[in-house]
Length: 457
Image (cartoon, rainbow, N blue to C red; front, side):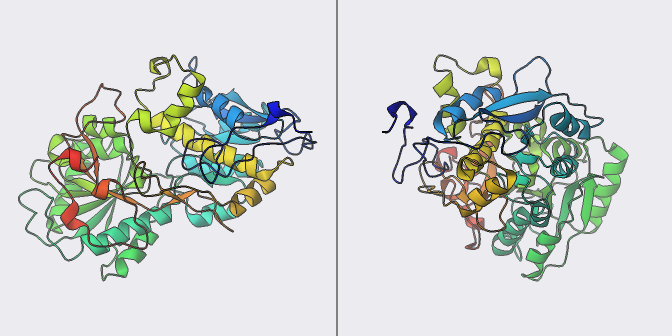
């Protein structure tokens, strides 16, 4: 006889556990033996998940969302239990050690891209047989994820996939044309490219996938400029002189919001290139781009982003999940106004919860991987209205969840969706309102920089 109290509500056709169009097929009932302690961090009743305590005394960005996944996903008699572990920016691997030795965790979650050495943390987690799950772009390549199997996972595409899509966008829409979106001194010149790369001793980006994509349209590998937010004005001036002497019109940006904007603020008023953005620059952080990037350069920012379209909070699965458990809460006390962090935390938990459900009752890192890689997510209307969410791809050898890019440009008149009403210095506009492209790139140069934000949001 079926115990009605154990039956979970499913939504949509085909049925999913939640309203999120990226949620996986629904499992609405389980009764039986789950195997108890099937893996490190797993008991009959719980699955221990470690998160670094980056803001001591405050809830992590994951905490307000966990109840949603425990309620709506099938974890076969278990619940996710978050455990905070100490975090020290001077010794980030210590957090992973604490997750293993103090918590005996099944998985380690990173809350955002502000970690200086994500790659090192991922590798240490894999060495300790813990899953490492992230909801943002990192410098890790597809090969890194495969070598870390079955422990390394990302909601966002691998770095080489992001590079390829930016390169393909450039080949179809930018190469061979004048730098129409640069400053007056450059906009009549044919485009010449360079790469701004975030300097990282631990996890450098080799941009080989970008170079391979550009070679397919006859462009030799562009020079690479390593940048950090604390580069001196003299250092920036020397680089700027070299870029001007080489007639560089357009910069591929593979650096964080802070590093890019601070570096840009030290340029002289004599050099105004195009900024060809990538998903590796934390593009969702609209409020920071609008606040920190010099105004004269914001009008020259555009690119290809491999993240789902930014939407008003009321249209985001992360907000739906939060409100389900906190119906009378406006989110102010957990910082939902800066909803970039909630988006990332939600995506991280979405991947983790999907893998746990697909693993079945006998949860291990191996069954987690096998379950995800055989799953076929319904993902209705991917890349189309109303949500323009990214496509999902899991299959043999896949450890990243989404693929496909939206083409964007900056509009100072567009309302920010991640500033919580505090920063209103513009936001990202979307070609065709957020349609996704991957191997089907076409020339989109004529669809950039519409002056009307209503035509792109």
